[in-house]
Image 1 (cartoon, rainbow, N blue to C red):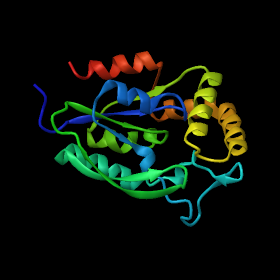
Image 2: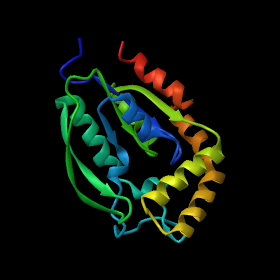
Image 3: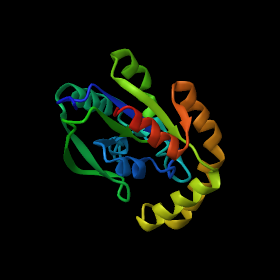
Length: 197
């Protein structure tokens, strides 16, 4: 019998384009996209790379706000979360998230591993998974997604995507060091479903 309010949640990370958001949708569990906690592009001191803001640096992200929202969801089952538009690099509104009635929920994004330490200390973390797959495959899926959503100019997306592909092994190693378990998409789905039993 599901609890009224989830006791814990699952962090899901992986390189941009690895399939985190798609998996969360397929699993059908309540989820929070941590990318919605980016700073706006004009926030002072934003890191730079590839001629634009470095959206892969944790300095571009509101860690404390994301952590507070996850704690509130575990405590009350509800929270107001921002809506962030990647193409304009700005917050455009808010959305109501309700996770009551589910034994666990998912928080997914490239910065999910940044929350492992605090959430482990609070006893709120059920699992922390890092989706991995061949780098060229991730590069292609990321590029197709970013082009279809017109996230940035095509040449910028190519330059950024190539750099991210080079960085990917070190990025994954860093997330594993922080406490994530590297898994395939299918393994991640199986791990999440195991927490529903």
